[in-house]
Length: 126
Image (tube, rainbow, N blue to C red; front, side, top):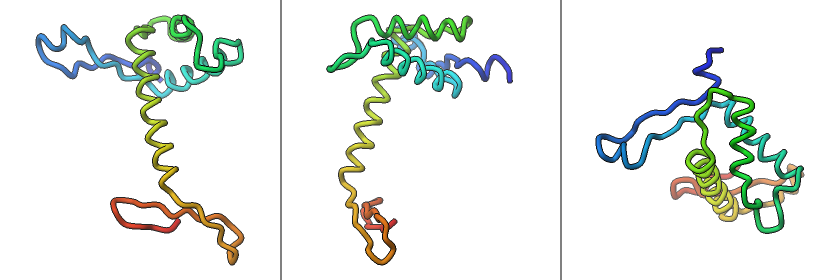
């Protein structure tokens, strides 16, 4: 596996002045995503998480762990880790919303739970 596959890269999605103002979009590799999830898990175990979220400084701790595993990486707490968590929270909210719109039904004949959900305006049974 090449180092390009191990570590994400920056891809410029904006032009001219916008690129300079906002910077570049960072693409995370699968390995970086996996390591990041494990870093968050280890922070939870080491009591960086409290009842209402992570304590201040957890992003810097995450950056340090990521740089330890990927020494040549350009991952920064404020830009990349904050953005990754923001995106994951939105994805989680969307998933919860979709699950809450599904209806779970017990099928006595099959002795199993079936899920009826709406997909593109039509009801389907799974």
